[in-house]
Image (cartoon, helix red, strand yellow):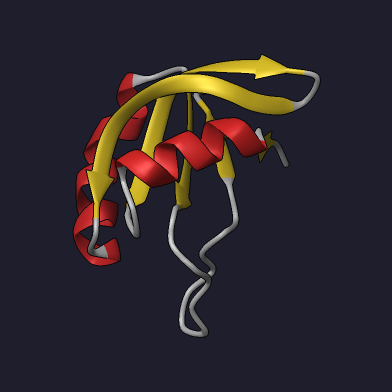
Length: 85
């Protein structure tokens, strides 16, 4: 599992507070995601999931995570990296 660089995540959290983000064109450095293009941001996880489903196949690599505080009902804070096969 890849992790998001602390500084990169802080920057994204300021720009998109309490939102789900989908990143593409990811820049990695020593196993950390240090850059990328935000291709989707959404406050509602269900809406995010529906929209992301259509976007993910268009990119070689994507990652998604939540910028808000962890919630008991979600797996927020986790990062999932997907790779096109």
